[in-house]
Picture (cartoon, rainbow, N blue to C red):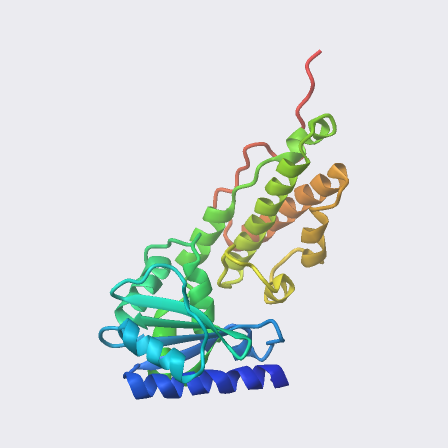
Length: 283
């Protein structure tokens, strides 16, 4: 069900698209983010991507669209290139993120992930948006891009192998009690949580990036294969009690490994320090 807020923001996206069509010739337009899925609230942005067969519009044309919709001052999102340009600006209090990209650039980004298997990248966020976004224009072009962005078995394996990297906090658990290491422990736990999610995302053919990870519970709910109560247990990794948190991490890593072995028994899932091992003090 689309919320009233999402409907309002979609109408703004449609206005932007109409102006883009007046000032240029985009081959396709894709609305992404929470507005496209109907989950938008009063803090949501409008994320609209315009795709072009040839060159993207110049700054004058893009600014003309912004001015026509009553937009405020624009700020760049990353550097402008020959193939892509993205800006953000407010419209009646709503933040708009407006991107222009050539189809050749999009296809190259897709290839980096699905062909070259560069998986630890924010590009996966773009691919997730490509598959879940709402095509406002050029539906056939969007469908072709989606068909190109295939989650293959090779990509699954690359995800598991890339994110299977865990610092063995269980091995140094007893030491943590004697060390002033709270900040470092939380840093390791945050990376460990990302890695558990990355491995499981690969196992479940779900696009994943650590970049601006939001709606973690929605992500976890999309996994068919996962340890039980995964979201709650990931949050438990940040329990103030170090022993409690480290014990949960050790269990989660072990259960995740068993799930992976059930699907990919040939993958090397070694750990720098095996589960159950502990650093013994010298006498």
